[in-house]
Length: 234
Ligand SMILES: [Zn+2]
Image 1 (tube, rainbow, N blue to C red):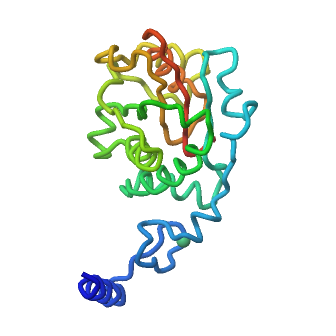
Image 2 (image 1 turned 90 degrees about the vertical axis):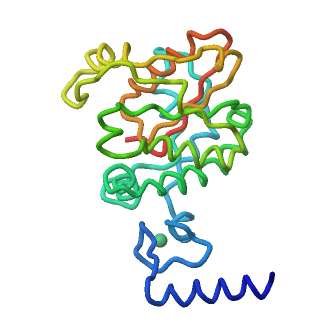
């Protein structure tokens, strides 16, 4: 078995000479055990550590709007920096695995907090069917997959659904945005979420209106709790 592994590693190194795999954040060669982002870049990412404090800016976003157990974002959204580039590639360049890598890393921090280790089910914010068709995947689902792996919690990406089309949000006021999203989400089988602590996952939180609308639907179910995890806060 050892000899076999040695041969596989040799082939790996050999093909690496001709087809180098590059880090999606810094373009340097990846080592054998690095998948898409090199360890140097992962360590250097600007982490918020918001999950360690209750009065963090993401939690505060929901105060007075809806009762969220805990909310956090993993990274500072550095305009023009690596985080923005990674999220751009994740959403618009087809590199869905970035979501998995970052989600997996994010989860390794969250499991160390009691607030998040009590989560029962990880649920990505569903993407509208038209966007899903155009993009081919839901980036939040890939983040949720990574979180599910490192947090060792089940993923459910079929119970929270989008039921109505939303117009583009960008030119709307907060109230208009809220009117626009509140009737958009539905739960297929409420009993699956009953008595559960749900971790809602999205890529970037801006106004929080989409996450609020999803949370409201979940919290209508008996004895549910909702926490929120996003990769970055805009
Ligand atoms: Zn790198």
